[in-house]
Image (tube, rainbow, N blue to C red; front, side):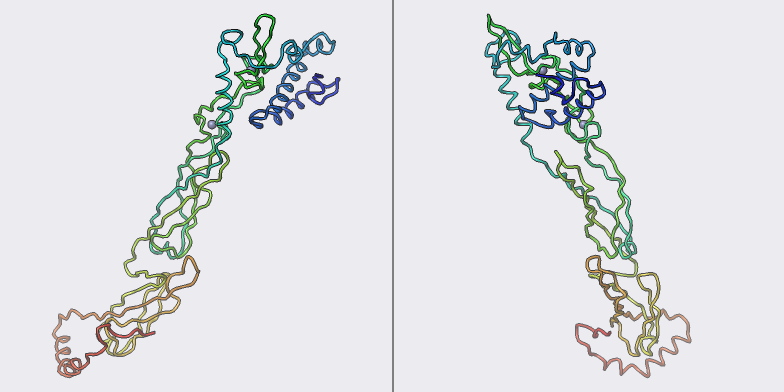
Length: 369
Ligand SMILES: [Zn+2]
Ligand SMILES: [Zn+2]
């Protein structure tokens, strides 16, 4: 095995070239990137061996002079195979250990990516905010990708040789004249130290973080509506997509307006003379302005008028509802003698006619547009 060829270098390569070649190849063949790929693990081991030898001036000069044997050549004195014996070279490792390791390797690959959970919050809006839309700022505490390990759950270890096999990727045991060699249980044959569990996240690859999120609540939302903020839920596991954040809207009641669908309802108190003689009355509109309503002579209490397109904008369709005004006849609290006298006179003139006006039925007066 030519160590220069392993790294794709010529024999006169500089230290910088060796390091660059090593970094490029180690990234490509690292066992974490090629889980379960024995050929890649073997290649990685060779890359590490070549690097360790060529980057050390002493070892490199001996290698160049042809006096050194690299680890791979030494191993040819034995043969590849499993050591079934217990208590020979490596007392800790048995066939059972290897079997368990192989299972563990397979188990670690199996779980599929998982979508992050959705998160739910509630916001309370004033009636005006719900009609006009609002920006809501909220702190969202959620599971995010661990920054220490970039979600892998393992700490990155630099190019450090495995402490059990010293980088060769194999452990050997001698029985009589036989030398047994097998994949190192410490590094799985990679020759490199295995990454350890990431401490900040305990190996889950996620940590809890808080983020301030600005949520645009669209104009026209109703009480109980939900606003979805995509991707602002928990982070997914193993590269899975993010969950969503859902904001449930609660709308406070308004002292004047009541919402029904996208129509707004308003009760308008009218005086007896306005109802009888007709009047032009300024009624408040939900945008804070006013609209002039013509109340015709003879308006009854409970009679309704519709102002087109003065209601709420639908958050779904963008269509505007109507403002429906219900007239409610209010009797004056009469205190002065002059008003009482006028009412008595009014009664003498009109008492009979009121009694005869029983019509309209139980459903009340018709809706006027
Ligand atoms: Zn971590
Ligand atoms: Zn090892």
